[in-house]
Image 1: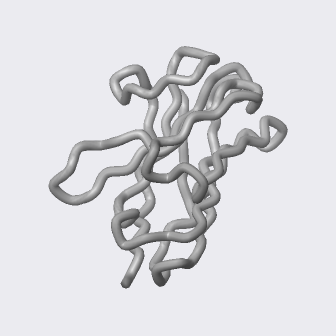
Image 2: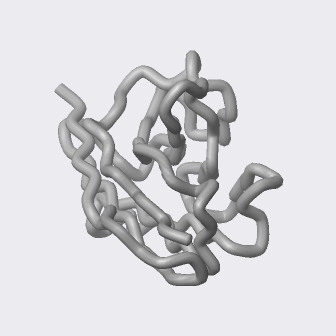
Length: 124
């Protein structure tokens, strides 16, 4: 059974930084791509960033390019999302997810396993 556990969310002022972590277990972590998604109240879940199995390829939503960085440590079975220059519009529940592919996926329906989410709140 694949399990994903996010941590690192919290309340931060605009312009601040947070680092989210997602610890994975239940299968060979290094064989699969990972993604970070977010969902704000009243909005659909959207992709934030994704990374391939090795970490050699990444994807970012236009809204976070240049501010967020996704990375992974396959030795620790963990994927990270470094978030800098946070804005109030980044406020959402952030989820990590994984699916059946080693390559980057950007569509939420392609992901099979999801964490419970961690709240990020950016105050103005």
